[in-house]
Structure formats: structure tokens, C-alpha cells
Picture 1: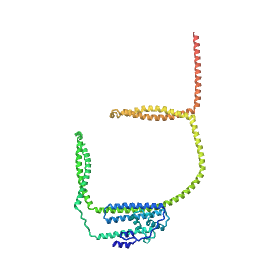
Picture 2: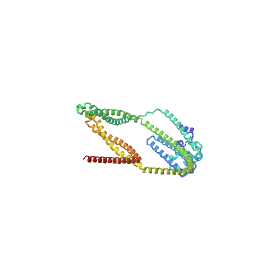
Picture 3: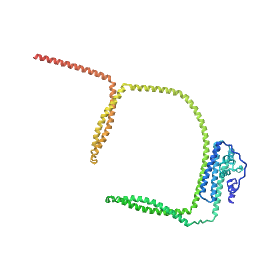
Picture 4: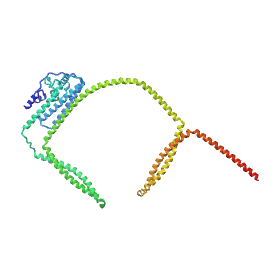
Length: 490
């Protein structure tokens, strides 16, 4: 009686509550099919099918909880009403996303024809289809607003107020009931507590015994390492065995005791308060389902808004792309001349650079300088590497003499090897660099002054020939003079 009075105060258009109380909605004439495209109808059918599948899944979860028949039926009906509301909201969002300029009257008419004709909802089950048609009644006078969007908003507010008042009445009724005692079977509680205590004791005892074995063995081994020199190492395994045994005993005892006490208390408390725990689970699942439905509804609304915004953005972007295309074509026509001239200039510069490089490569001075530099680098590099190898080996061997007493003489050859390797690398690098620079410089200078060097050699050769002729003439004069003096003496 109190529930009926609350419904009469809040408003009679709630067809779901009327069906719950045994009332039947008024019959209405046949509704024509909606004038929608096949693509839109297919999308709406998929949307409704998804909502019905989710609703059926949650209803099966509630039925598996083995609640009382009346309570299970109420939970199932509440879940179906929530998904029916979410489905109607998504239908509105989908229609607005397909036609952003749709009027409120056309939107209300389309929703009305979709829900009350079998063109779109004919494949659904009778229960879910009835919830959809009860959410949006056939009689337009029972709507809570002028259009379907206002009807949905008023419906949600009305159901919120109705839920609050029903909760208040239910609280009053519960407060009036005498406190009920819930006797329980002490034998069953004892049996459950013993089973839980045994299982927890065995599990926790095994775990703690394993930990105690490992920890005791490690501790016994560390303790046995102290007298190991005196016992020839026998104290290590003895300590490990003794420590492991003590650890297993202590860990199993402590773990078994804690598991027995904790498991028994937990099992007994769970068995005694199992009904309250089931109610809490159902309450949490109901809140989670309601939250999920609200989030999905908001997500559908946000998706519709984003679709409309995306369509507008695409139109703006298309116009912008056309403008940019025209500007780009003009820029390309003006840039064509500049590009051709720049290409010709680049080609000329590249040809000139190639000719300069070829001329430089064919230059005799460059060839002589490169050959002299390579020869100097090879010759001086080989000599430098040899000198570095010998001197580095000597220095490394000298450095290895100091720690030779501690390394039994091994530091001397090791130091010699390291020093010779380092000296070889340093000598090759230094000699190669010096030979490269010196050889290149010498070759360039010799080739650049080859004329002066040739003329100098010619003058030196002439002077040498003159000197040889002078010496020969002097020698012949001396010889003639000596022969004449000898003949006069005889």
C-alpha cells in the first residue's frame, strides 16, 4: 500500500512499476515503420543486440548466486531496466550523429516508431523489448516531456526520486521489524572451522618448514665455518644438518600453529556471516553494473558529439585544402621558372667543379706530392714502428723488473710485450705522420723547384768538369816537368 501511494504521488507514467504491480498498459493502434536507411537500421539493430547480450550476461550472473526467488526476480528486472535505458539513450545519440540537424519532433517520432514497430526491435526477446516499450510508452500523453530527450531526462530524475523514497520506506519497514535471531548449527560451524584450520595449518606449516629448512641450513653452515679448520671441514655439513633440522621443526611448528588459529577463525567467521557476505557481493556487483551503464551512456553521448564535431572539422578541412591547393598551384607556376634557372646554375657549377677536380688530379705536381707523401709515410712509419717496438719493449721490461720478485719474473716478459706493442703503435703513428708530412713537403718543393735544381746540378757538373780538366792539366805539367828534370840529371 505504501509503495502504491508513493508511485501515485510521484506520477503514474512509470510503466515498469505498473507492470511490476500487475497493471497492464493501454493498447495502442499499430505504429508504422520508421523511415530510415538500411545502413542506419542495421547499426541500430547491432546496438540493441549488444545491449541485450550484456543484459542477459549480467542476469545469468545474478541467477547463479542462488538468491531467493522474489529477490532474484527484482534484481533481474532492475538490470533489464538499466540496459533498456542505456539502449534508448544510445538510439537517440546514433540518430543525432547521422543527422546533426534533426528536429526534436522528428527525433521523437523516429524513436517512437523504432521502439513500437517490429522493423528494428523485432529480433529482440519479449522481455527486453517490453522494457524498451515501457521506458518510452505508446501513449504520447504518458510522456514526461514534450519530446523524447526531455522525457528521458524527466524519467531518469523521476526514477532517482522514486528509488530514494523506496529506500526510505524500506528502511522504515526494516526498522519496524522485531530483531530476528539467526540460529546456526554449531556442529556445522565446528566442522567448517576444523576443516579450514587443518588446511591452513598444513599449507602454512609446509611453507614455513621449507623456509626454516633453508634458513637453518644456511645459519648452521655459517656457524660450522668457525671451527672448520680444526675439524677438517666436517663441522660444515654437521652444522647444516643440525640447523636445517631445527629450522624445519621451528618453522613447521610456528606455521602450523598460526595457520590453525587463523584458518579456523576465518572459516568459522565466513560460515557464520556467509549471508551478509553474499549480500555485500550482490550490492557491489549492482553498483558496478550501474556505474558501467552510466559510463557507457556518457561514452555514447560523447561519441555522438565527437562524430558531429568530426564532420564539421572535415568540412572546414576540405575547404582549407581547396584553398591551399589553389595557392600551391599558383606557387608552383611561379616557382617553375626559378627552379629551372636554379637547376641550370647548379648544373654549371657542378660541371665547373668536376673540371677543376679532374684538372687537379691530372696535375703533375699533385701526383708527385701524393707519391712522395705515401713513400715517406711508409718508409718513416716502418722505421718509427721498429724503433718504437725495440724501445717500448726495453722500457716495458725495465718497468717489469720492480715487481719481478712478487710475480716470479713473469712481469718482465709481460711488461716487454706491453711496452713493445705500445711502442710499435706509437712509433708507426708518429713515423707515418712525420713521413707523410715530410715526404709530401719534400716532393712538392723538389717538383716546384726542379728547374733551379737542374740548373744547379748542371753548373756543378760543369765546375766539376773544369776542375777535373784543371787537375789533369796540372798533373800533365808536373809529369812533364818531372820527366825533364830527370833527363837533365842523367
